[in-house]
Image 1 (cartoon, helix red, strand yellow):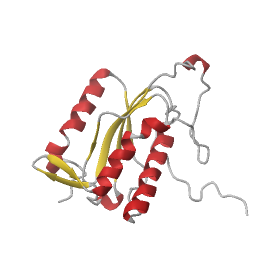
Image 2 (cartoon, rainbow, N blue to C red; image 1 turned 60 degrees about the vertical axis):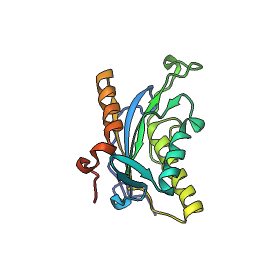
Image 3 (spheres, rainbow, N blue to C red; image 1 turned 180 degrees about the vertical axis):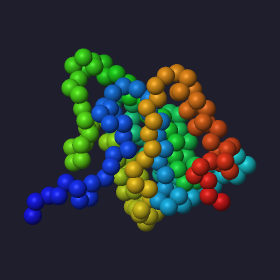
Image 4 (cartoon, rainbow, N blue to C red; image 1 turned 90 degrees about the vertical axis):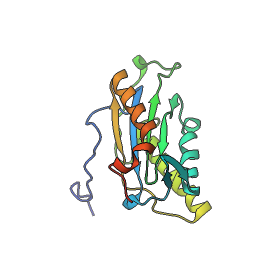
Length: 176
């Protein structure tokens, strides 16, 4: 039976034509399935993590061990979501002048691209949570990303991340 290109087509929320493996900073938000507060709770403007929240944190901090030239700081884990900045640095061994343009396509992941990093991260958390806690269906489909374009935007994102626990009641993801 031939494939119907209109069937099961998902519209991408990525910036069309942008190479998400390029060096730069990317603000990421990943939300739990049905916005359930399964990572922990906020008490007196501080996040207290459940076991799943600790897995989420451990896997996030280990991203650079699996992908070269990355930083994943700052980040914050909230009761039902995670905010973080992934910074991709220039690969000293292969300058941008020698890079072939890369475009993420379904079934053809681009190693080191934000979509591949996010897919791998979410899968790692899910595998570990299933193995250690018997949990499945942790994540909402997809994630939010924003390409940080300058130092001012970077400073705003960092401030937002660090102030997030204190602003939990005003957070768009807040569920009481």
